[in-house]
Length: 204
Image (cartoon, rainbow, N blue to C red):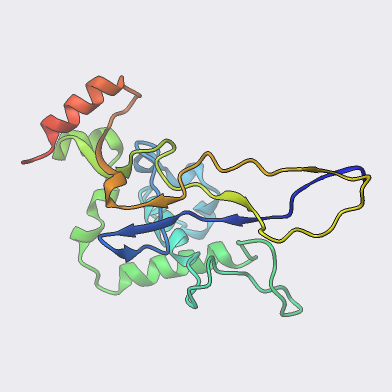
């Protein structure tokens, strides 16, 4: 070996809202999320005979199920030997999620909490008006992981060339000052038009 990088770790940005740390974030892409269809998804075999909008509820439960109940990051899947696997989806992951979706719907949950999932993006807009959401100002509009060089580096032979890790260009700390209300449209729109539309759509 004649060249290598500095030793580094991968980190997630720190996020806090009004002083409260946020440990997990789920990001939804609109209009893509609103237009999911069950027959276009590999999860369809776990929801036989169900309406297409169930795909969206499955997606929400799927992402929530990734949260480690011990708050140690993302849920790790155990291998047959009992050790942790590198994958985040085990052989029964999708079936487990589908079971939780059925359990939720059978629990008597208030339909008002999930009725919006029944509509695609255009129908949502027609029924309820412009679709707006709180997002981060940066693009992409969710915090990105970054690498950081370790403060203590191993000694290297004189023949090795050490390539320094570039300082992160991504934002590493987010607060409520980084949030904005954004209008989502079926197609991308110029920033000026989007900003004006958000101002018009957001109540005072």
